[in-house]
Length: 316
Ligand code: SF4
Ligand code: SF4
Image 1 (cartoon, rainbow, N blue to C red):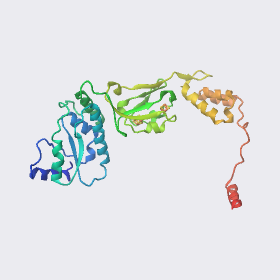
Image 2 (tube, helix red, strand yellow; image 1 turned 90 degrees about the vertical axis):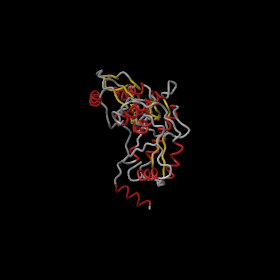
Image 3 (cartoon, rainbow, N blue to C red; image 1 turned 45 degrees about the vertical axis):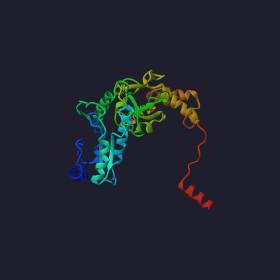
Image 4 (tube, helix red, strand yellow; image 1 turned 180 degrees about the vertical axis):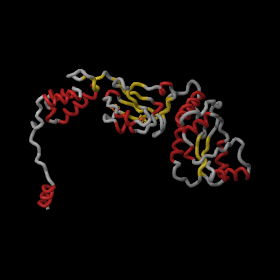
């Protein structure tokens, strides 16, 4: 509940009728958008049987995130086997204290999913969320799955790479805002840390090979907290000076694209072989290799604005 809207409603409920049920513990927030996943998960892990967010009857802007978070926490509890006949986390939208009392009444039958956890809420909200979900998983017992599928747009999951199509261009590591994708500075290698992925989709939109797909899921296994090697290759060495400068996958990809484009400069295999040289040797080869940049087929004559205007006048 919030100070301006929820507090007067709870005061009215406490003073009239049967009063505020003893099992209801009001928690005041500045805005309902403060009820993030970490808060919801930590509340349940610490022993809350259910959480009800009190909202005005007329839904305002900025509540979409709260409803998504309620869905996500519901899906996580369902997957862990901690769901109840009623949703453990839900919203009550009303301006009427009696309607509020009626909406709270069924939730009073809920019982806590586990004994209260004892972790301290230290670190970022993401770290608190990880601790809370880990506690809920532990409370769910040994048979609880470590990986639970989550709804679309859930802010945790896997960015899966079809490694055979990845050229190790590392574009994904440059756009990833959380460092979930990272490179090895010592070798051509792509790593992925699932715990850090917020499923923003920037990597998938940036990947030139379109080999990244997003899979929202909750993964509480220890492996999710360790960077995993997605793809690695031995460095490709320049065929002229033997200096390592790239990866075979990316060079083969560029050669395939240039061959498919049918460009005259790369019709000759000897010209394509230049791509297997480092940037310095490529410059030397271009200077000393006797390449004539004007040897291609005749180019269309340049067209000026006057040409365009003359054509338009002629047309009509
Ligand atoms: S989805 Fe976003 S956070 Fe996850 S790896 Fe891709 S860019 Fe990084
Ligand atoms: S952007 Fe795509 S091709 Fe490039 S390294 Fe990442 S997954 Fe591989």
